[in-house]
Image 1 (cartoon, rainbow, N blue to C red):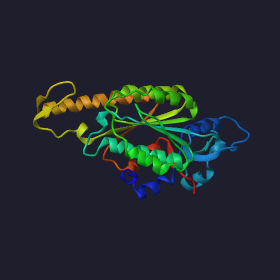
Image 2: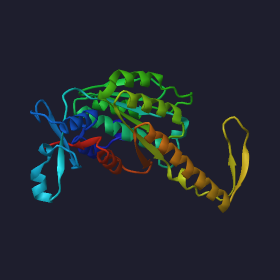
Image 3: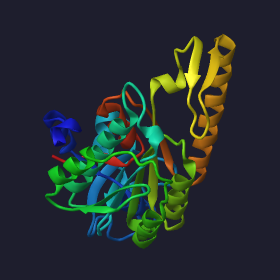
Image 4: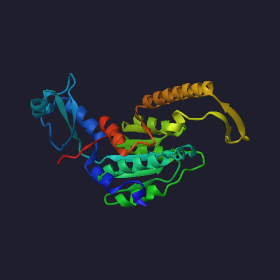
Length: 290
């Protein structure tokens, strides 16, 4: 049911947000060039700290009078933003006392609610599955659909999503919800989005027990394709594991950022607030104007 993903209180908060994706960035770029009609056909979107070279006509002097700091107003270009939410449905996502798969679906539902609230169309799909389209008043139907999704044991193939990203071009905002343990399909999507001029971000979910396991003594492992293994875990093994995890996370972060995407790492135990704050910090969502 919808209640299993988002509470009424969370929905109320989400309705006060709006998506601020590719159109805002393009409008900002236009604002930095000379124009006789600064606001024609555009709607105010968000503020950004002033940087050298910004068009002074975009500076919000009212904010400067209150805060003593320079902020540039960014405007949203006309047109409709294509919001694509891709969920990694690999078996590794179904893990953790605070389940990563549940956390990823909650975050995807929240982002999709924000997108629908701005009258944008939302494409929602597991990385290797059928693409679902939601629009307008489809909020509750979308949340209920997400609540019923399960992880997929089959190999993940993102070709259908890559085609969708390619068709959207620079009007695309792509969000991928994953644990980064199967990088190839995610990177293929990110590179396609970057090549087409869209914006993308990866929300990487980790369970606390993955990063800092509390295992001591003998344990039994059942790796796929092998028989049961018996392993003695002591401080030296845990230290080696911790170093390898740190090295893997660094390499994954580098790969994501090299593909032109923002990276938001999230603990699967987090509530929605820090995830929304991170999306705001990267300029992907913004508060609605009252």
